Image (cartoon, rainbow, N blue to C red; front, side, top):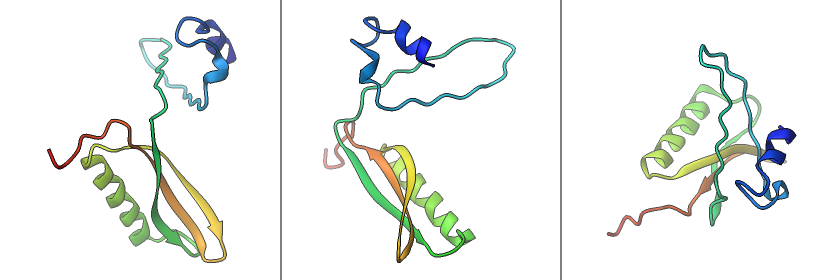
Length: 107
């Protein structure tokens, strides 16, 4: 990945030190290629609580997580990532939601 980041210096961005998040995956295809998608960081990222789990994630909690993700999608809000934090009350799952390109609902 470092090679591709370096190649794009002064072409797609000033310097690859500006890259804050990198994600890659290997897919098999009859059309071999490299795809690079560059996106600016949203102006604002909201941390939204999704569900708290004690022990194993239940089917109901997984369903709740899915419904909340769908609701955010229907509101044209982009989920950047799903992450968890643990404390003495359990494991808390959060959505990180980009909020820079939101259209206002009151229009």
